Amino acid sequence: MEAASLDVNQFRSLVDRARQVHAEEQAVALWEAALGLWRGEAFTGADTPWFNAQRDLLDAERLAAQSDMADIRLSLGQHRRVVSELTALTEAHPLDERLAGQLVLALYRSGRPADALDLYHRTRQRLAEELGMDPGAALQQLHQDILTADARLTLARPAERRAPQPGITAYRVERPQSLVGRVEEVSILRAVLDDQSTQAPRVVEIVGEPGMGKTRLLAEFGELAAHSGAVVLVGRGAEISQIPYGLFIDALDGALPAVDPDYPRLHGADGRESQGSLYALMADHHGTEPSLPAERFRRHRAVQELLEEVHPGFRLVLILDDVHWADESSIELIEYLMRRPPRRAVTLALGYRPRQAPPRLASALVKADAVGHLTRVELGPLSAPAAAELCGSKVSRLRCRQLYEATAGNPFYLQALLHRTGDEELTDDQLPLSARAALLDELEDLSAGARIVARAAAVLDDPFDAEMTAVVAQVDESDMFAALDELTRRDLIRPASAIRQFEFRHPLVRKAVYEGMGAGWRLGAHARAAAGLERRGASPVVQAPHVVRSARAGDERAVALLTQAADDLMSSAPAISAHWTRETVPPLVAWSP
Image (cartoon, rainbow, N blue to C red; front, side):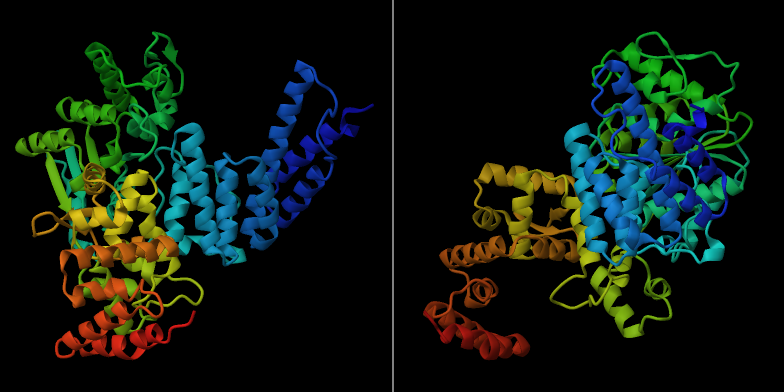
């Protein structure tokens, strides 16, 4: 039998042709023809090592073909058609990030952003539980783009479509969308790149609270550096997978092929040569931090030499984002490179949250500043005019002002509220789903105890005191203090001006936590808050917000308390007083068994 008559060879031939043609519709037809040759599992019933290996190989080829065809169909706007197919594939291959990303995008383009975000979080949780790692950069970026309704997710017009591109390399910078309200900051970064007066290493730190745009400004800096002819390497700290040197592995792993082939081979921890993988060079076989000083120094020198050999003759810009989540070995290596930089023109750009910065990083930056090698860019809230520019001409001035006041000029929160989906409206009662998901994302990896205390604090509103939080959360004092420490380290809450009181970092964070908890837990929490405040002898006005959210019909004490609270507020807050008197008290009086 001729080889071409065999299904496997026909399949491979059609796959090769599909990957070579430029017409997308023709490529889909070839993919369908190739996949149509499959009739169940290969070598069904055969169970020998050789057959099993061949079966696994063919299954991998089939899955790659299905993924490639899904890319083409997504580019053709067939997102609704591929949802069911991709759903089945992701259920069969739950750890495949490419499939997960394709389904997330298909769901989003099908008008199902909530399902898209839910799938991302389930994938992230499964990767953490089974592999101990975060999603890759591409899937994380897709998640961020959905949260901000990034225009890049919108399907291009037919004339603008291109064939699927390979994955982002470690040193390719994607061109970002326009940057708003950061003219002064960009001019500072331009000055760093334009300064040719010295070959001394430069360190740029971009700091700010969550959502202020550190990642976006670092992308702008990378874009400017790339256009100036520099080699740009980009790495990002991972919140879950604390792999030793993980920040540098993310940035440099793809750069090894760019090293001069005549350069001596780098050697891994076991003395063997590392061929093309920084992970092989840096990773400890037991998955722990390297303990011996000599071993750590050897690895630091290896990275220093690698940075000297990546595209020599060009300026090097090493961008490290989310450094507050970096592992201890990466922080130590950053400190080493500040003291002993590569022998070439190099700029190290760091983005991090200052309240969560490791003390060792802060100490190293102080030393760099002392010798004049440090440029600090601190991002604050957007100005009102910049927020208006971000809102655009289609948003009324009244709504833009409301958004600006609600977010206090935080650009990430502003975009999350601005780009709501479907019929969601910005009201005092409920956050848009996309905004809530963006804010709740920070709570994903908290301990169970910290999440409960955060919910209790959200029920109490800002500012909240430690003892009442323990009452509402139903935890003892030691567990409560441990949870408050964790929430403070994550910069979700901060000490308030009064002793033993705290407040959420931003009102929208509290609102998202409040709306994200279960309705039953919230009801019980308000009841515990009301009872605790009553035991304290709090005034009716202080008790009322919790009573009104937890009282049973026919509760005479609740009716009396709310009536008294309404009377007390008559002069200072007549709207609230009227609301309690006209809308809240009557249903409680109208008791029914």
